[in-house]
Image (cartoon, rainbow, N blue to C red):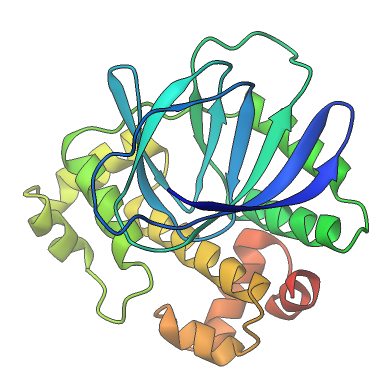
Length: 254
């Protein structure tokens, strides 16, 4: 999988890079990758990806941060053919020796801080302390176990369809994974910690932040594309979940 790397910061304790990964023409698992040192990967754009390590497979989307460990051998399988953007933090000095990788869900507020820190680093206006704080929070956050069954299929469908005009209702989503809406909703919350509605909402906000960071300034168009009733509806949800207004985010991330 070809990559474009941009070095954003190089310090004594860690380096930060912006990574663009271009999907392969053919689907399927990549060859094995081997890490030389611990790496933490924050999402900065749309992602639908499987990561296989040892006998376990994790689903990764635009809300998933990955903590990969020393000498880890893993494989990747893109599910959607799209360019994947990430902020990659490589640690030179380890606080503790990690034996297993960790996969964690970011809140919209944390994801916004990733985008804002990347923007600051690109502008040479700080940002390293914000990245260090995010890394510390990630290490103390709830870790996701590999999802199974209907929940795994539902999460993938949510990630694949978040920016499509025709979106699945809860009943359609349950039918697609052969579960009743009640049992799917209960199992999904048990495995992810979020309701189906919350999860889709967070994925939509992740798409908003990605498009703002890529220079999209049409807030009404963003709201329409992601299924909101209008710009004011999106703005209210964004401020509640992220903590800043759409206008503030547009100025900070552009």
